[in-house]
Each structure stands twice: as C-alpha cells, then as structure tokens.
Length: 344
Image 1: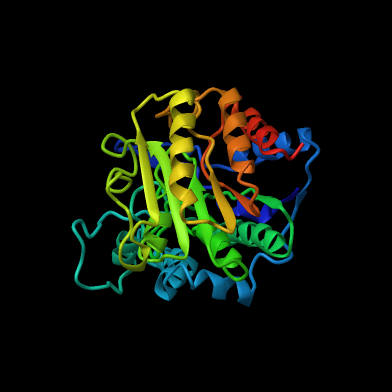
Image 2: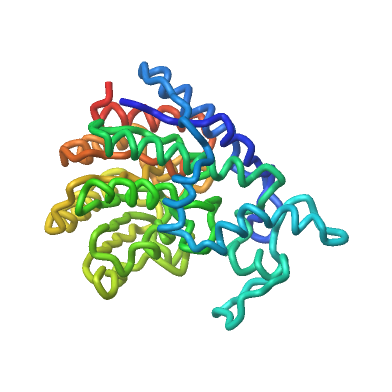
C-alpha cells in the first residue's frame, strides 16, 4: 500500500492552544507524525512525499470544498496579523460572531474570528505551508487510488475533518478527507466517507450536507457532552439532494470497543443502500482509552476488527489520518488498524 507524507507538514507546529480557558501544550504537534511513521515502518510500509505540496491543480481542487476567501485568509492572515501593533506571534481571535454575523469583516481580527471557530487553531508564520502540505498528502493518496491502487494512506497532520467550507476548528484547517472524496468523484459516481474519529466530523458533514453523490457517516462521542458540541446529532440526515446521505451515531461517553464496533456495523448497514463505488476512511485513533483527548475507551486490539470491517467492503479506499495524539499506544493503534485492514 502506498503511504504519503511530506516533511513540510511539520512547518505547522504551534506549541500551545487554549484548553478550558488556559494555555496548554498542543497535542497536535509533529511528534504525532513521528510516532505514526514509526508504526508504518514496523509494518514494512514506506512513506513517500507528494510530487508537489503546492500546485495549481491542488488549489483548484481545494476550491471545490472551501471558499476562495477562506483559502486566501489561511494564506495571508499571519502577515496581516503581525502587521498590527502589539500583535502576538500566533493568530488567535478574541472575538467570534456568536449566533452568526451579517457582514464579512475586512479587519484581520474580525476575519480571524469569522474563520477560526475555536481556540484550537492558532496560525504561525509557517503554518500555511504545513497545512497545504497535509492536503497534498491526501491528494497524492487519492490520486493513487483514482489511478487504480486498491488502497492508499495519507498521514495528514494537521488533520482536517472539523474544517468546513470556510471554517477551521479542532486543529483542522483544510478538509483532507473531503478533498480525497472530491478527487475520487472524478472517477467514481458515488463515494462514501466513514469517520471513525473520537469526534464528529462536522466540517465534512457541512461540505456534503446538501449533496447526494457523497455519503457521510460518523460515529463519535455524544456531542451533547463532547466536542464539537453543535453538530453530530442522530437527527442530522442531510438536506436537499443530500437528504438521507448523512448518518451520525453518537456514542455515550466512555463507550468501549464492543459498543464502538456494534455502532460501526450499524453505520455500514446504513451506508449499504447508497451503494458506494469508493470509500474514504477518516481514520481517527483518538477513541483509544489513553488518548489525551479521551472521550471513549477503546483498547488497541479493537482497531483490528474496525480495519477488517472496512476492508471487507472491498472498495477502492483512501485512508486519511485524522485524530490520535501522542501516547505510547498511538503507533500501536495504527498498526492494529492496518493489520485488520489487510495491508500486511
């Protein structure tokens, strides 16, 4: 199986984020990629760099899932932010349009509040290069599968499933899984995204909510008690052309592997009527009981049957890395999933 990662992704490396009102060390740091890469090596899988981390083709594809003004914001905000007197090194908004806003602001502070949904997405001087490189890894994996590979893996860091059409959140800036889905749509008529991250993939849901050609399904900790809080309910089924093409299965906090796998079986049963021709797996590993963002209680061995069930669908598949944060078990969780998926 081809696996993709660019060292340029490490250029996005904010040291802190705001957690419960206080600065805290960010778990979304380059060490994540190091641990995951080590696990891949242990399975005999080699990481390749994308041919390009910034091409006109990639930017055109990103404009199919994100608005032009949002992409421009990500690329230019740090320089404009630092030009303000007294501005901090990292872009971090102090005002948000709670409840919505009527006017798009011109000022950097206003734009930061508009586009950065929460305080987990600080932007540094080199962040955009790292963010774009992560998307390029997803693009490379999707192009490999579009070109005939049975499966490919993108080690995306930063992750992407909380990023909406013009919103960053939860460490996510560009929606790598949505990008991969749009690339597979260039060949396949119906593409499904299955999100097994601890958190609901709210950005992915928003991008495809009114579309009937991409089915989105997510199982995750119950958002009535857990991030992202405002999305992820079982009553969110899509709208317009996408009505019935979105399925959420919220799980009680601290649900174990058995409950998670039973929910995955129900999710896949719900997907069957869509008859997907290709699959994106938004591969979060943060449902593990030791993850620093813990909300569920899976053991490492639970990731093997998860991988096996997704492999049994026998679809062209792009595995896109989402959450899963530095602990001694992180690499083992990826290895367990890939053993189940049948890559070794």
